[in-house]
Image 1 (tube, helix red, strand yellow):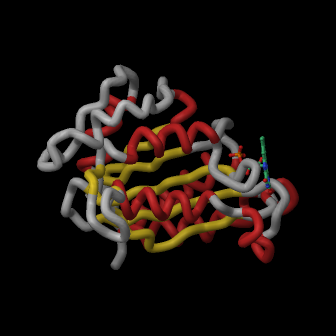
Image 2 (tube, protein in one colour; image 1 turned 90 degrees about the vertical axis):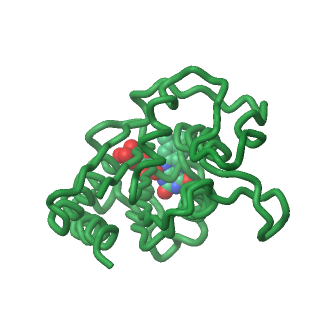
Image 3 (cartoon, protein in one colour; image 1 turned 60 degrees about the vertical axis):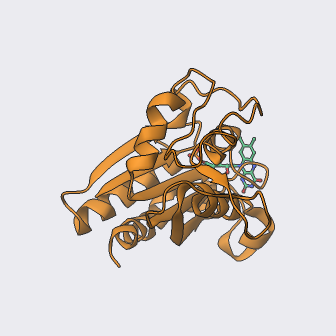
Length: 201
Ligand SMILES: Cc1cc2nc3c(=O)[nH]c(=O)nc-3n(C[C@H](O)[C@H](O)[C@H](O)COP(=O)(O)O)c2cc1C
């Protein structure tokens, strides 16, 4: 089993990085043979999508469409395609994902998807028919879980991209609210259990 963890925080070793570590530990506790690839987006050279639509118009039979941009996404696309599951993690910044994660998701959108028919003609559907799983981890500095619905547009975005482009059903999510006050360890056990849930039916 291959798991790809995508980390959208600007800070290594802080909340999101730590929670992803715990989720990965949860994965390994349930599936010791699982291969986990951690992709820290901030360390990668990832350019903005150009809206050239070469990927969207590429042969729908290809599992990974062509992208005209020559950057680190070239090596990331095959990892995403091969993966059985994903951990997608980001701080909540201004109510949504970080810019680095959004940039990454835009680059993924049509390279791993093709135009479909539902819910509307032309909407992305995964190029691969394989059934995959995903979990999301988001952290917010101030807003406690009870107010999550006013603050967290990141989780629905991740859920949509997982379903429409990566072919992955979201089986759980963690909202680590108010980490500046509560501290990240408060959420560590939940992140561990979330990682387990990713790989255990
Ligand atoms: C530009 C910016 C915008 C932010 N917006 C929010 C916000 O809307 N709500 C919130 O609770 N925290 C907000 N924060 C705080 C981050 O969510 C918090 O620092 C982050 O979850 C910590 O993750 P990290 O330790 O992995 O960097 C913001 C931080 C920055 C830098």
